[in-house]
Length: 286
Image 1 (cartoon, one colour):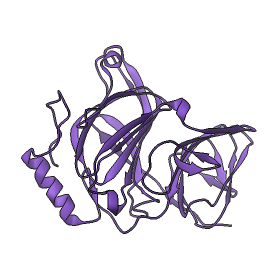
Image 2: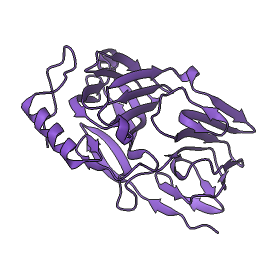
Image 3: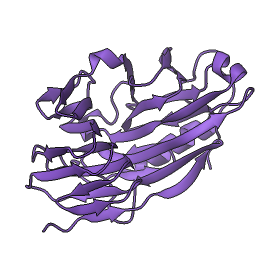
Image 4: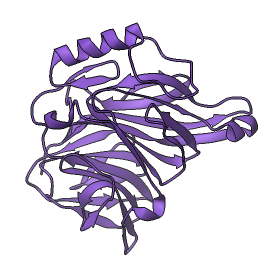
């Protein structure tokens, strides 16, 4: 029977939004290109309130926001202004310097809303770390789905399960949303060298071993594994090819070279950074 490394997330708060964060962890700094994983817990915002993350900078990574409930407005220094709803992908590649905001749209803030979703960061390959930034939005119906015998797999980004997402990832990646009805099984193929399963909800077993909700389970390389559902279940599978070398992470910056991070910190502190049009608020260096 395989032995699985299990990461229990730490609880954090991002501008009033409660989250669980299993990555990065002392047990694993990355899974494929994934270096950061936030589960935005179900949060009911009363009228007049909502998520509001003001301008902040990034380098060397791509952010991917995926919601189960609610809506967010994404704006960035490229001029993007996009509403993102459930099942849609908001994909931003930072390159050498980008700034963005994410907030509850004004109409939802006025009436109150519920928010639940995931945000992950994927480290860029070294050749793309200092490239140009970009943004793309992918509607729910553009993401490929396999739905058979009570098991539904949606490919959020990358490839797997004979599916390929249109999201323009920069390295071999798998990011799949999995829904399983009670008493169903799913074979997780050995398609990527590094993989991890995050259990959002339900009673799941992996090769006969019980998985705890809100745990990130690292899967051994080179093995196809059977996932079983003892109730209606919801999970995501992340992973891909190993990074092309170690990454440093400091605040919102990810880089293979410490000098790139120090330079980015100095630029943001000095105000020498691209800005989001018509936005003045910003988050200062911690």
